[in-house]
Image (cartoon, rainbow, N blue to C red; front, side, top):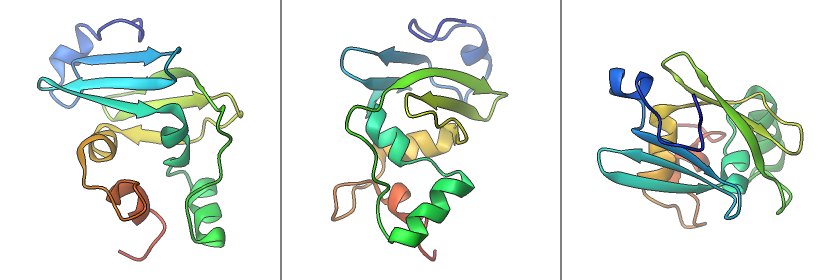
Length: 127
């Protein structure tokens, strides 16, 4: 399955999957489409949004958004069953799994005062 082209067969068989997944290497974005709505997420925002235990601990220590280099890029992605995607970044980080619901929240959820979506900001704060 190529992720630089529309997702086929597997995505159509599972309603949780987006109908398209594209890495735009020039724009440094990940494009996902669900039900006719397209989300464009920057590689840097995705890296900052990692919910692995290492990243969550770092957020708690600094009580803020992870400092991520401006030039970080998404190198590849792999599906994790029907759950979501594992993303592999140029800074060597590949621990986080990004569930479809989380990617939708990042893409279409309300923004916080800092400009980040509420779902990102909730990660390390008491809910």
